[in-house]
Amino acid sequence: MEATDPAALDIIRHAMVVRLATLSRNGRPSVTPIYFVVQEGHIWIGTVEWTLAVRTVRADPRASLLFNRERDPQARQIVRLTGTAVVRTDLPSLRIYNRKVALKYMLAPGGLWSYLTHLHKLKLLHHYHIQDDDKGDPCIIDVTPERIELLTMP
Image (cartoon, rainbow, N blue to C red; front, top):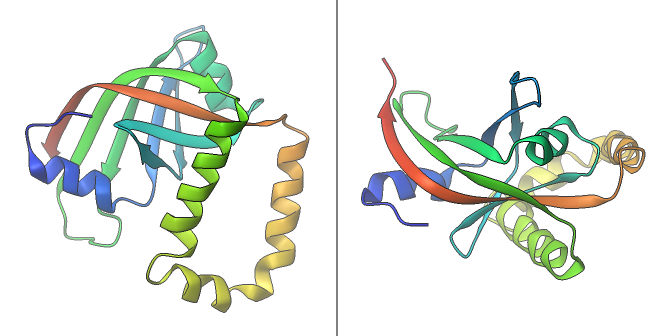
């Protein structure tokens, strides 16, 4: 991933959720907020095969991603990344993704504390992930950046 503006890379580095925008075969837009990691300059988004995001990427590989500083409500800058997406299902990539997600969301400062304070919700989380089993096998939406823009909200 190449960006000339260090502020754009900083926003991507600190963002916890990305908004993935894709188009269906009919040209209808879909926006999905979801976890992500950066892998060798690509944006990797974990999901399962029968989600709308995966189906739209397979229909049209163009993707736009929006990043912002969720933890700073006063921040007015966002990053729009546009690129081409493919769906990956290979086991080595899934292992890399799972390890990076664990490091970013669970083992990072605050992540373990958040996990421990929400132990009472583990049963609900388990039921949520069981639903994914009905939607197919795990996969990664791999977005290759083509353009990165730093934008200011009005």
